[in-house]
Image (cartoon, rainbow, N blue to C red; front, top):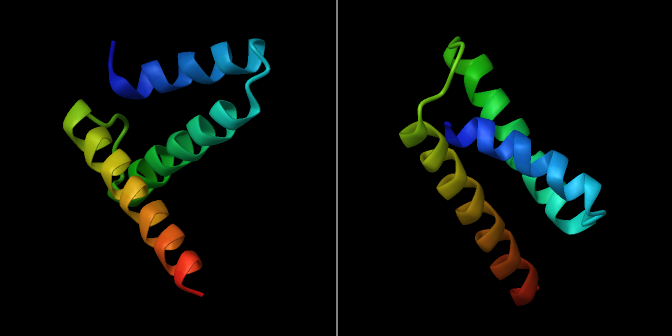
Length: 71
């Protein structure tokens, strides 16, 4: 199972568990993967690309948190 498929399954599991924080986080990752696929004109992303997307999203969130704390 690829990481993109695992993210989709985890979204469903989090929705059933009513874990709103996890649902929103996983939906953000899922949309980032979909945006990558649209921009690169691919049908599927391999695991290394998904890991890169996750790392990029984590870095963006950390930078946002840092700038928010400074302000």
